[in-house]
Image 1 (cartoon, rainbow, N blue to C red):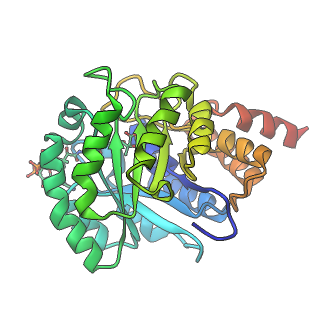
Image 2 (image 1 turned 45 degrees about the vertical axis):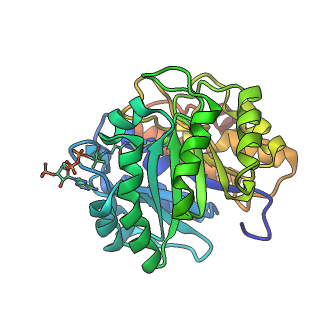
Image 3 (image 1 turned 120 degrees about the vertical axis):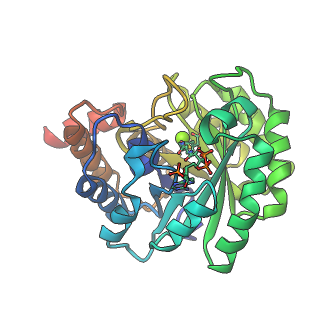
Length: 302
Ligand code: HMG
Ligand code: MG
């Protein structure tokens, strides 16, 4: 984390937000969205996903989006990579950080990546080895850490088992995802505290979807437990194509409003993010999902 900031916020809207979009989003709009977010000061923007275009067609133009960007020095460009084929594609671009991804639920792993948790981790071995040789940063994302759309309950012990299985890969960060946004604050705090007994919490990120309106409470609980990295999506865009009914991540505007109120430095220009949230909502033809975004935009226009 940058010494001048108290928390690191990873903007995942261009990837987690747009991957679920039913309408075609032109490459120029994707690139402008990512550029605006980079310019607003996010230290890390998840821009692309090198997955099968048959599985997630919306992400097929990731290489072109990356090519179009002017990257500020302070920022890192990230992309999802499920296997070696994905890494090879990412290596042809300016991707600086890859996100390998699995799940704490066996049923979700099958639906999302068409293999078991163990098979996914076996696939990561050569991916991580090559990514390290090429000097990339690596995050490991674990879906369904607080509940699964197919299997229901997911125990903290199940999350710990996956962290244990990933340990030999020595990734830089673990992204702990509440994919369907079912978790509540007590659970989030217990989850993060338990993880903190095994892993340095400076390597843990909270990735909370906001389906049940609990993401901000879960972030507060995770902050209390010692977590200092959070993911968010401008205008609350998104959801996972393999988690029916799940909405987007916590909106970046809501998260920034909380951080600004707590006096925690993020290095991000909240007003610029509010304008970007308004702009992308207009492009997609629907209102923003961010309550703070809406209120701050109206205030700025008054
Ligand atoms: P598969 O069908 O089991 O793989 O898919 P396969 O190895 O048998 O390959 C099948 C075809 O896909 C072949 O093409 C491969 O070449 C191609 P064909 O011969 O049929 O023409 N292929 C690829 N093409 C491009 N890039 C690749 C790639 N790999 C294979 N990397 C696979 C397995 C993992 C590829 C597939 O299941 C997949 O792409 N899944 C991605 C699902 C996804 O993107 N989900 C959303 C992102 S995860 C998420 O949102 C959760 C997160 O936000 C955290 C949270 O909130 O939980 C991160
Ligand atoms: Mg997600």
